[in-house]
Length: 254
Image (tube, rainbow, N blue to C red; front, side, top):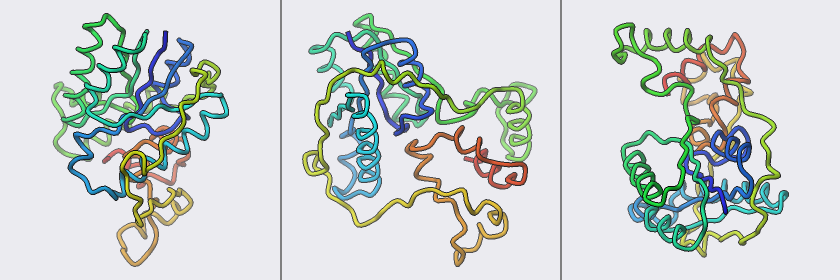
């Protein structure tokens, strides 16, 4: 029986919470990704974000091949895809990192109910944030509505937890098979001319003074990488120093 890890906004193998704990507790772990037609059907065929996702998946595939494994890609409506997988495969468990957008939370609830009907364990994890919405609250238990007090409470809470990147992931427990990696053309994705730049933290020394000047190339290009999880927020914070308070504030604002 296989244990599935469903990648969504966490397109990396390193410091991936769901993947790490799935591999730590199970063998025969299969990584999958679903190109969601509920989203794709509203986008142009050459959408830059979809291209970036595919490029990121290709990088993951290259790494998985080192372990005689692969990522299996599907395209369609997620619930329909999972129904088909459940009909054809013996599944022991499903693991994924939580997504907090309204559509995603509704989708994931439907998938959890589907798996519950088959008596299959589903485990979700906190990954794309340091704190979830109910973990940084005012003393009266209500959410903050002003940023600075929220930031101060966030920083105070951060001092009490361990948010270091996960290491020593047990990749030997990946499922040993190679299904072949689908090209953009096979998936109906048209190559874009827009390229996502690699993120950089080399300009942090001048970040506070240059970040608000459009004429200065002083940003980190980190936004799409955090958006789609090609790097974890824990990995970014681990590289910051005491003089990077402004950049840290931007991450907390996110």
